[in-house]
Image 1: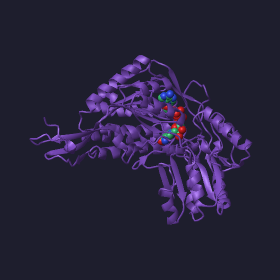
Image 2: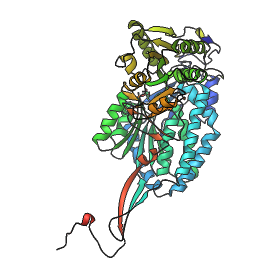
Image 3: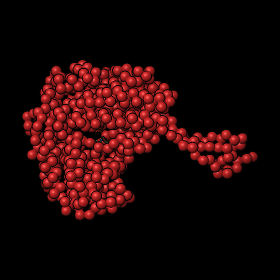
Image 4: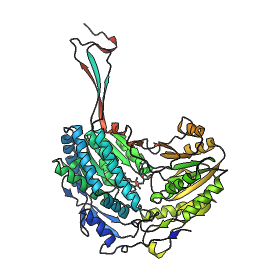
Length: 532
Ligand code: NAD
């Protein structure tokens, strides 16, 4: 049974005055309460286009109305960001690093309240909201170091008196289109590397999380202003599909970094390719944990619990598939269900809440449809499968975390092969690791995966050529909660993109191969003789 421990406070859907719960957070971030907010920033704040409503997923309260860009404002903002790039590219990289250090400090000073805004607007619990801002802080730290380490190469030339350099230079304006579920961190991953590389950025956030983007942009803008740099280094254009399409189609934006669903990513990827732009695609995941009989249950059970229920199942890395070795399946499921029964559901801003709401009403419908499909196909629902009917939760988008055992483990079945962005965990039983790896790899997506074992032979297989084909291949670590140091991203229909650490920065520059002749002769390569 799910225990309800925290009542949700807040005003009812459509109410006029903002709850103290919400207004305290907005005021601490210098966001005017009650007024219609401009949703475009390019050095100046503007916005007289379509109105976006920010709705609290826990209470249904309308938090703010934000004005997006008109086509003219959009055009002007893109022009300003191009000018900002022309300026920023002349600033030495370590000076750009110093700028990022100051942005890091400014974000860190507001970390907790900005985290609370993520919770208020997106719906994830407070510790995860704060953790998301911490990720932005961490990637700034990384990019400060990077600003002195974005090394090119000196390559040996076959010609006497010649040398070859591989030189990274800024690429231009980077378009960053982000999803609702990480309304702060994903921009951070892109922005920090991109600014270190010398680029200006145009951010189009999810239309349902405009407040997070406005708060982040205000913080960044303050630092840019203090340093006498153009605000359009970090341009913000809130809006929906039309704004996204304008960025995707703009020939002034050589690189588009898109985070979102596979369906939209497919359209974006093709559109950018058709104008010979570059794209980074970070799309849907359908992540599996595999539990071997020798796994440490004390560690594996809580990890699966967090992976499946964290952010109410709305992380791209959420655990959606659980493959249990038949020998330990009953014991594992028993322990997991006991944990599910202890979950605190309620206001995600209250300490101790572990389960907040889904982000939108529409997501509740998607959850209910998926559960219905499971039931119709004969799946056994071990726990959950319903929305909450408790009065205190009725204004929010709360759904019960669900564990199901589908009738078949056939990975081609839609139940297994599609990403349902909700806390539904499907369980399959296997006898041999090879079978579990085959199932792990048989779905279209390839973001995250996790194997639980103490046997080094299993580990070797899992991380090697016969192992998981995902971009994240963990051992005794759950599928979600990656650190910024490694390149983050997935393969196959997750889009092959990489962001954050590792070599991800190399995508934010244009590479030049420069052959330099410092001799008194001009020989041709490969011994070609073109003399007359
Ligand atoms: P979404 O695809 O609906 O929207 C993503 C962004 O694309 C939004 O800003 C949206 O306004 C914009 N958009 C919509 N149509 C567009 C178009 N035609 N052209 C350009 N832009 C357009 O995704 P969502 O519901 O906000 O986010 C959830 C999805 O994101 C999930 O599938 C999740 O797995 C994925 N995600 C992936 C990662 C990752 O790193 N792989 C991280 C976070 C979220």
